[in-house]
Image (tube, rainbow, N blue to C red; front, side, top):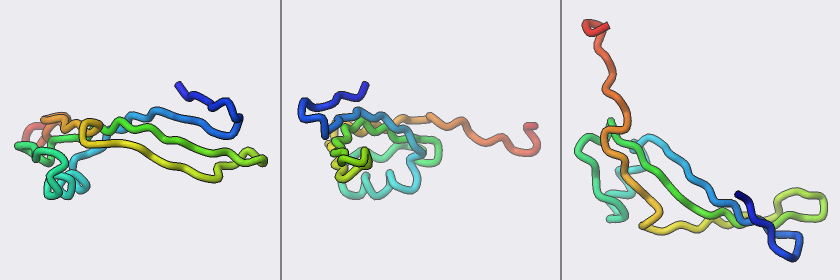
Length: 89
């Protein structure tokens, strides 16, 4: 749920996003931010972050900052079902 600041110009928005592990996950694992999954092609990443936005007088975004850390990334093993071969269909 978005939370507005008392100054009427700022909003904090918690966001959860889930995306395929590849291609971004390999770079995060190489940097030591996450553990590599057994099957990268079947894994996903879940990010939990907070976006803080400043809104201008025209009600347009003037500035956006996103905050997250290591504990906000989860590797979801075997989250993507394996693709069926033509013989299995």
